[in-house]
Image (cartoon, rainbow, N blue to C red; front, top):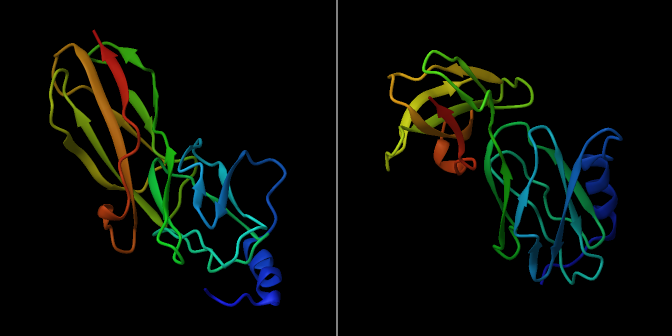
Length: 196
């Protein structure tokens, strides 16, 4: 068990910062037994607060390819804003416990004709730090096809490539612009559009 250092909690709080008044916040508890909830869903641009249980007997962390809270003492907290669509895997470096934060893709409109231009919102705001890959499925297809990669966001457009009517599905994967390793995250929940 890692020894607790009293002044670390204060330092961690200063680094993480206080939550902004206007942000929507999803609370995730980090305890000796893992994350609660294991699966969380937020909107693009919302923040997650990882609250470290005061009853913990050791330090824990919330770490992903985007951020690292560092080891935090019982009673500490850490905030991070997730702007891009995707599923972010969070790992506790102390125990190896994992949790997932899902950020859905947004599409407008959700139905239209083959000539309709659909707007896909990949992120709540632009960031030079992130790029996105879009995958889609034709109506009735089982396989995901890469539509675009390394999109800086925050939006892009889609026009059906054929006159085929039906339901098209979309999902997004997020990566760091510095390495474009999309394997670090998981695809966002699928969103469908109806073309008729």
